Image (tube, rainbow, N blue to C red; front, side, top):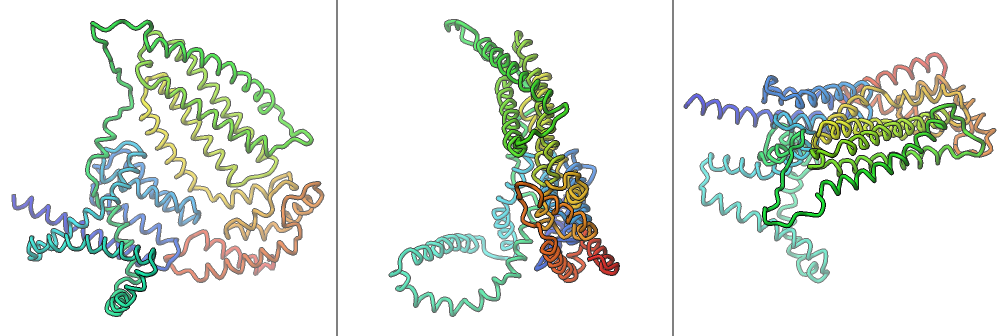
Length: 521
């Protein structure tokens, strides 16, 4: 019994020490520093702490997936230093923290709720910890209770005092003298206690405690455990004395679904035949044809139609219609509609592909491809739901982890470099967005300097267009802005310390120096 008490006591204090150590490291790494190697190291540190606290062997499959995602994103943030990698590090670390502290969670959605609940409950847990510390230090239980009761009303009074001062000028003038005396007494104290450095340390304490401690009760886990991947039939029997219904509600719903799916399948068949014959085979941009409207408006309308189709099918197959003995025809029509929507999704992908072939790459066009890929994954899971009587929770769980995997996958590519390289090599020189070159990150500067002649050729082609939609058509002006961007880049990189450094900036600075030595800029 004594050994158990000693173990429990040691675990409690080792966890507190871990949170304090992580907070100190957070403060040293991030206070008045930009993100770089510090974020990679901090993510690795939190991962090690979480594994040490929970043991690697006890981590669930989702926890290990989140851990791998956090490590990959952290490494890619140092290598590519992209915004999406930084976002992925923070998200993956939060998800790993929540699912490591509650190993039985299965879905990204409920893991996110767990993380939010953990931070929400953190102040309450801190007050409980403060109780333990105060009482263990010999404070009287009654006196400590009255102290806590007095602090809350005092805080509320201060808040309302300032609200009334802001809303009533006479009240403000009446209390001005009191405030001056109050400020004279406490101003120096507040100036020393509530500095920017102190507030940042408290912020780091909240971040680290929320990641390393579990403060939320098991309510979220119990909520998730109500849901299963496979639907279960719910029998509702009418009383023996009740009058029989004229038609079984399931039969009415089946007939309604049959009529609906027959109509929309026929409609979508016409759309798909048009798209296959027009978009899939030998597509060309006619004279005067608005490719922008064709892709931007048409693409999103078709994606909305796919999402609406998924919602309708999830509603139809939400409950006992899945187990109805006469639902074979309805299921076949539903699976046919899913297959047709998949074909429609491929048509949307080809629209975006044709637009990229004409105008080059941009972040929004890549975003459409990524979103469309997730929609197609959703269609596959919807097919499995209808075919194998899966639940909506199954779709949420699988699609949530698919989105997480895609996000981590996106961090492995330096998209700025990828976009600029593709656009510089694009054969349709007069339709490339030259202005976008200067809005990219500093990583593309060496590539632009090495291909200034290509950019000038694209400008020359733009000047021959009937409609000029880019601003940078003068090579000298473009070169001047590029030089200014280069100078700011060099000054920024040279001002970074080791914790702010990253491999992408080091590569950029090295390439710029080599180009300068070769007389290229």
